[in-house]
Image 1 (cartoon, rainbow over the protein chains, first blue to last red):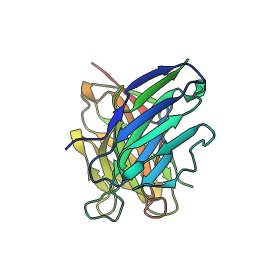
Image 2 (cartoon, each protein chain N blue to C red; image 1 turned 90 degrees about the vertical axis):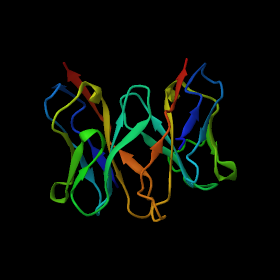
Image 3 (cartoon, chains in turn brown, green; image 1 turned 60 degrees about the horizontal axis):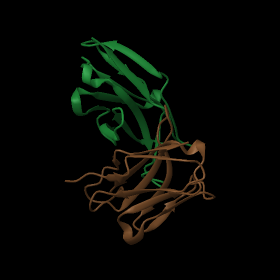
Length: 118
Length: 115
């Protein structure tokens, strides 16, 4: 079974440039998450989708960050314009909703997209 | 609000020695509890989880963790550490309802293994 796929793995851009990250979740996982992981820190939730609906985007800085999950499968996270402080790893994860048959609430993570803003 | 504290930022143990990584959580009820491991440049891999039932849970790679409600703790243990265990370990707590699925992570404990 294929895991969560993210691209690009690494991205280096200059500040004020736009950047986009793509995520393909595990097949059948309706719930998709974007987490931000700063160096030396644990992941912090940016946004959670249930199918196409963003059900929790309270931690997403909406002035420069946007996300979409068209058709309830793949998702894209965009930053425009990027700032120096956005340098971090952006992790995508997916899961079955808790209460779904076979669900244990476990999140399955991709390998992350490491962003460096110069 | 939920929170997770991992008091130890960095731990060094000798290969073959035992290991215990501490995790304390704050939550109004019994949460879901997880331990994840992250190798450099990699995503997070689930080691084990606690949902209900037996408070001592077994995971992959010989790890186990014990849920202690009275202490709000979920410490990770391994009787004999291998060099390949060197990585960063994250404890996480999840709600059973409401924002279920949103895991709150601790800041992590980096494990180094001496030969």
